[in-house]
Length: 315
Image (cartoon, rainbow, N blue to C red):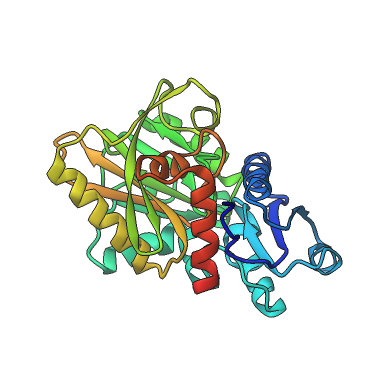
């Protein structure tokens, strides 16, 4: 007997847009759309643009499944628009989306809640240009090399560099500034990178990523064969439980809902899982981590889609 759909509402799978993660968003969106079709939902793929409201009305969309990554799709802007339209949507709300997208603000919130993060400093583009040099906060960093340089509000490791020598910092900062007006420099934590999947307010599990490249960058994330995925992570049980607990607390500290993925670095001693960020709209491509984690918890890709819909309607 065919399972009854969670909703009969016409679902718009919102994808694309103009962020630097557009291509990945489309891949996520098409995978979700295919899953919805297989499950018998009344769905339509929608590549968002400035006339997205007109398109949603024309397509008679009554529920939005967000497959957007970065930019206005993940920072609370689209969520706010959908709230005004009275259209329910998947994932976190306006505030949680905005907080999670801003690495500086989210790290401060994690610190307030006693969650471990790598030490960091943030610089403004205007100040950098004005001084034509390293701002004092960076030229005298309170932590040793190597450093990670990243845009404050980008995803998919876009604009991220690992700096091993101070002479390379300036070029890496300029690169990051090409994506954002604020750039974060944080202490690089040698060790393992573990990602924890959250669904609702329960931990699905985790995956350890081992890229063949220098770090888990854009290429390593989205090119098949460049990264090994270990499910569950090869860390001791106590550290794994600690990582899952910290991940859930990070998700809740920001007020997230629906599905999220929490990225952590675990030091070489395996003692402290440090929170890197919370992804409120994690990737849903064939190489994406959340579907891998869900599968290890007994949820197929289509099961995951339905559970995300169910949670959104419940919220």
